[in-house]
Length: 145
Image (cartoon, rainbow, N blue to C red; front, side):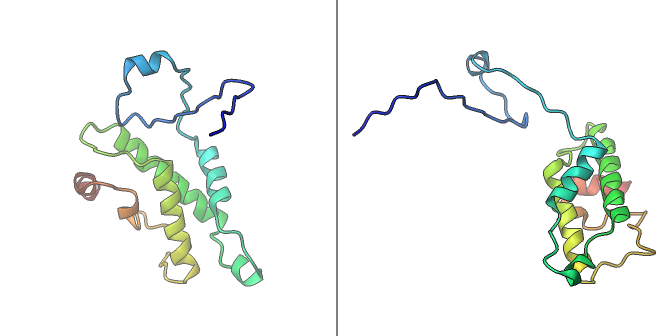
């Protein structure tokens, strides 16, 4: 039953991914700041920040090689650009899907269960595409390409 008064009014930060419209009365009281989708260089920084840190030398030897991380970022960027330009796509992959995809590839790479030819991602399809594509229609769209 104690009243606490703030020295300054609090600042509340609300994020939105544009999936739902926010009421105009609410928006009038907001300061809007748009964050662009990360560039390839920013995706690489995100990838390295999210990678598992090696606990020992043995684990360090099982880290994804830099060229493979670059391939993953490039393939993700290409897929995202294609899907973003298509009005029939339900859900364009976001940074969250990129991180999830990277982690799945890293997991199977570390287990030695990732079949890569010459250390390259397959050119004809995305491995673990189910991590990137979130609807049946998008999966069908991807399979047609």
